[in-house]
Image (cartoon, rainbow, N blue to C red; front, side):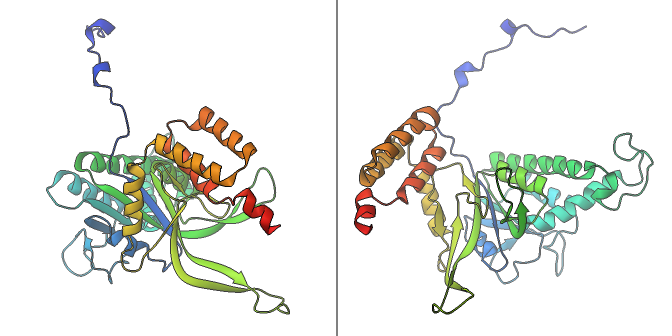
Length: 342
């Protein structure tokens, strides 16, 4: 009979403790309405290769993973095809530095079909006691199918994490949007943009990624004259990646980034790459100093006291939180400017 080793026989790992930020390859999730330029953005990233699940990159000068020979061979037929591609990129020599998966909407459809096929026609005490044919996730009953799909999403991202760590590849996930009603526990419900995938999957992927960006045109409403009863929608033609959550959409970043970055027509990825480089080289002390400068500009003693307290209790050393504080107070006008306007 073997016995477990005592603590004294297990070598300590304390000497290998690492400090400071880990500059690992990042995980991005960009979602947007159709035609905003998601694929173009990703195509200008660092040495990308696409898993073109949606067959939507035909007009781009982009490398696509070849699943089969012949026309259309770059489009996966099954979820297993996608897993095999990720494994191939992990184990085989290549010079690609970014994997783009376009889009998560299509991957989800293939993943759901995979989960149904796994349990269809086989007896399983937990999910298919009768051994019946499973045709959709609803066939499992009581939300079990969607939980199985969420478990598969976790396995999927574990494979992507292995690719990221072993090969240093950046991961970019792309998705479309849908407008859904947000059940507001503190007031009236309201509509907001969400990724066009199941809520459980969307929540997990947004949590897993380091940067979640909502891409949109700069739009607004305008009345042409005072007699107009109905405002007219307008667009400036500018496009932005929004990186800070609002009531209208989810977004986030774990590294210091501005609240939004413009999508340049000439170099779609360039402004974001520059912001990432700057953010990774910005320390907590730098951000605190910048916050101090903004508070001095605003000239509000009460606000300064609240922000300093928040930094001391919640954010000292946390660059992502400090960056959010900086983005917020940077938008505030100085008190002197408000008084003169009044």
